[in-house]
Length: 192
Image (cartoon, rainbow, N blue to C red; front, side, top):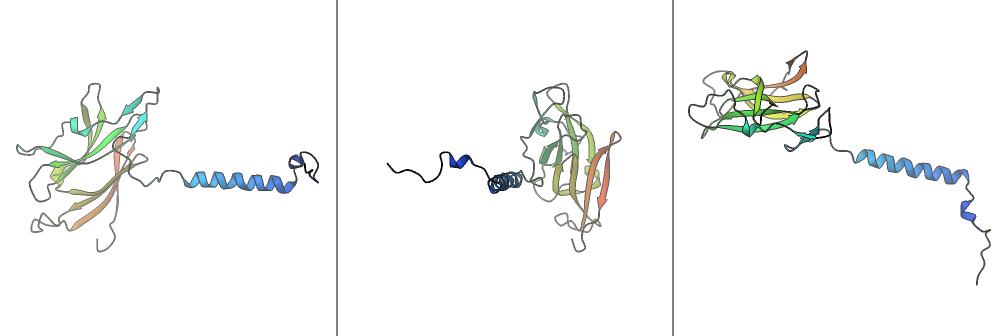
């Protein structure tokens, strides 16, 4: 049997360098955990659920496929092109923002942008129209983050511009403020 030259339990004799090494290791772990957070610019999945403010039961965002939209399609069906959930009014219950257009066979039909809430029944209801299809706009990029709806609206400068190729672009946001959705516009970059 070989005996150690160190006294028994030598590893329990702490020195300032040991505390410094422990603190450095803990700081590295905390920093690494901070870098592993979800990307706030990543799109929110359609199956997003939130917890109601007055309980612990998850509340599903309204399903736009079950809603009736104020959209005249001349006998055609409508298409929910894009959708994103989010708690827009801060009440703890998610709303859904839906981009909807007529199911045209070709071309770029105008879109409507609608805010849905879950009514007392199973059918979601439209509570706001942010873009009316009568404006003859289509919607490019579209997100809902932190209660702000952002969209790129595409339009036409005249009736002679082919409907396939919008020649105008506008960056807009909407935020719930004072009991209504307030729209703000940001100019698109030159050449867009």
